[in-house]
Length: 139
Image 1 (cartoon, rainbow, N blue to C red):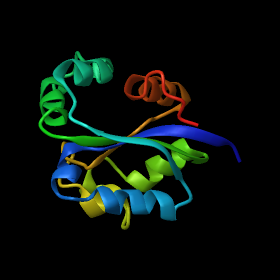
Image 2 (image 1 turned 45 degrees about the vertical axis):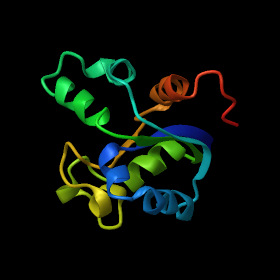
Image 3 (image 1 turned 180 degrees about the vertical axis):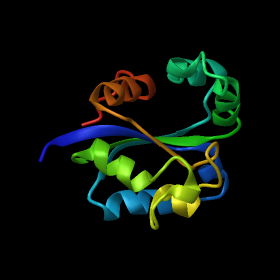
């Protein structure tokens, strides 16, 4: 198996509902290590740059509004096949369709407020880690 890093977010809805600890507990219980973590309140330019790939989509403005409404926790996770493992732990984007025991099933309320984000591939992970942890050695 390949040791890799991925990027994860406990989104504002999860932070508002005090689910940070529950999410991190799932991360650790499933063999991933938290290599970097910080709580932040995204500014509009940070959120717009991060989600620039979605700029032309109709939900872009709503997504940016949501991600800037309150603090979130951004993390770098590491482990065997970390990208796929974290995506599996998050569950389906729609919490109603997510598997039992996943972050989104446990803590998500809707497609828009689904508690978590995760990189979808190695290049995305590299970009996202660099976006939120520029100049840091995330081990």
